[in-house]
Length: 263
Image 1 (cartoon, rainbow, N blue to C red):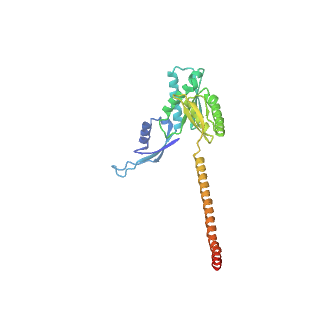
Image 2: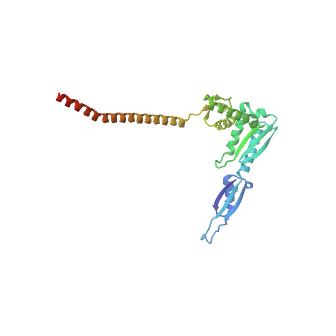
Image 3: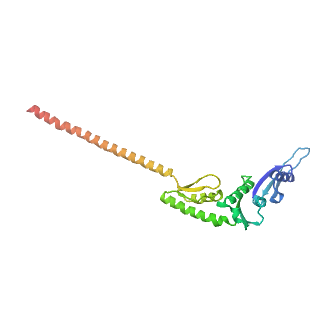
């Protein structure tokens, strides 16, 4: 649900203008009048009306995406299908059930990826909304993507432990996006995609730890400082011994000179 506080001449005119500008059917909005407003007398003492418009963007996006998806499937020649909708607000899963599910999924999920892309283009016209429409075909996300996520997490732990990269099978964008998120949930690793087009391979790599390098440099600096301090301490002791030894040498030399003179 999104909220808009709007000023205008009258509440009715405000609502009409809002629906026209946003291209939203009236059934998806509710209006609460904050200030009725006043036209005043001959324009004197005029006060604008103020309303709060509540827009149910979730239901609006859901209907819009479902209608569009049906149009695309029909235009592509598919007739034996129905769209099962699961509400997980702000996510909405549209699972296409069909006897021709393999064609709707495509090799490496490339057709499913294209359907998701088209729906995103239609529904993501406003960056302010957090509603996500997820397209699925015959529970492909549960059957295929979920096990791949688990595999990615296991590989990520192995990469973190051994420091050796691990490469996964070629995947379409819709799958690869999920794997990136799953692998990066393990600290100490990162991921990169290689290839061109919609289908690319994904590699899990050990993360370069700049902080650790900083700690190592700091340790070397501390060792250098400690070595310098020890060296200075040894020099101070040597200077002290030399300073203490000079008077003794003078005292020992003087009697010898006196005895030599006496002889």
